[in-house]
Amino acid sequence: MYPFLLSQILRGYWFLRPEDVIAGQAIVYKLLTGEYNDKSVRSLSDTTPICPNVSDGGSSYDKAPKGSIAIISLRGTMLKYGTWCSYGTEEIASQIQKATHHKNIAAIVLDIDSGGGACNAVAPLTDAIGKARSAGKPVVASCDLAASAAYWVASSCNKIVANNGISSEFGSIGVMCSFADARPVYEKMGYQFHEIYADQSTNKNEDFNLALKGDYSLIKQESLNPLAITFQESVKANRPNLRTDIPGLLSGKMFYAKPALEAGLIDEIGSLTRAVDLARDLSRDAIIHNYILS
Image (cartoon, rainbow, N blue to C red; front, side, top):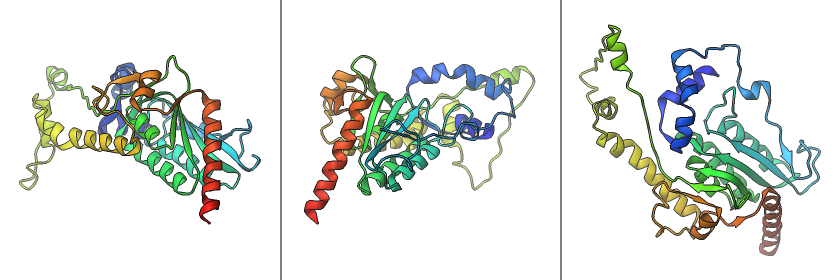
C-alpha cells in the first residue's frame, strides 16, 4: 500500500485543482521524508471493504428488491490504487461492474465529491461506466464537487446532477504537473548528482531534465498538451450541448451549479434523491425503448 501511494505521488501527471495540491503538501512532505512511515497501515479496502449502497437503504445487492439503484461513492483525491485513506478507482470500478451484472440493480448513481487526481485514475472508471451503459444500465452522476479528473468521470455518465445550488462546483478541465527540485538542499549537504545515459538513450528524460533547467516547452509539448487535448475532446464528445464559447470553460475555470447548468456542464440542480429518481426514470425509459425495438 505505502509504495503504491508513494509511486503515485512521484510518477505522474494530474487532473487536479491547485487548491488540492497545496492542501496535500504537508502529507506529501511526511511521506517523502519518511516522517510518516507506519508499515503496519494497510490499504483502506483491507480494513474497511467497500460496502455497496442501494436506493432502498440496504447494503446488499443480493437482498435488494429488483429494480434498485446502486449508489457508489467517489470521494477525495483520485488514485488508481487504494491507499490507507481512500479507495482506488480500480476498486470503485469493480463495484460499478458488480452493479452492472447484478439482476437486482436497474441503474447506478455515482456520488461524486472530488477535486480530481492522477491521470491514470480516470480510465478504470470511464471504462466501467461505458460498459454499464452498453449493458443497458444508466449511470447518473450526483456531484457536490466534480473538478478536473472527477469531472471527466462525471461527463462519462448519462446525466450529471448538482446535489445543491450553493456549494456544488464543476470544471477545472485541464492538466498540470508540479515537482520540487531538492538538489540544492542536498548539494549543500555535500551530495553530488550524476546521471549517465547510454549512447542509444539520448532522449530519455529529456523533457524532465529541461524542466529542471526552467525550460518547460518540451514537457508541455510531449506530455501535458496531448493529455489536455484528449481531456477536452472527451468532454466535448460526452457533453454535446457544452457551451464551448464561454471563456475558460475548456481551459481550467470552475463554475458553481447555476453557471454550470447554463454552460452545459451539468443537466440539473437537485439532490442525491433526485439523482436516484432520474436514474430510475432512465432505466424505465431504456426498458420501454428496448421493448419497442424488439
